[in-house]
Length: 103
Image (cartoon, rainbow, N blue to C red):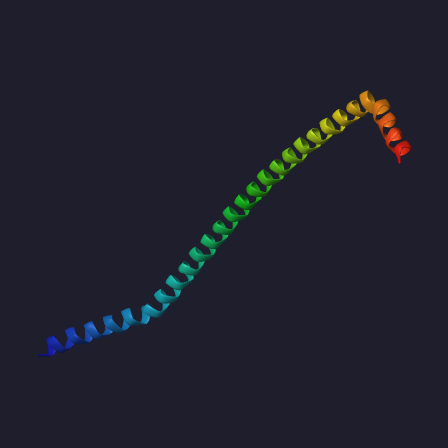
């Protein structure tokens, strides 16, 4: 009987030691999880910022290309209008003068 009581006492002491370590282990696990979460958040933030920067750069390039194309088209239209005016300005002036004199 004494041997059973001693074994129970040993088991009880072991259980107390184990139970005493649980809060420490819990705190250590919580700290580890916090660190992992912060690392995940940091990596996610970096990846997101990188992707946003790439999208902005792509959109800026696209905008610049479109603007340059619009400038080229506008310059071509202006040149065509000037050429047409240079070829027809005398005829247009005579036509306008004729209409003014008719009134």
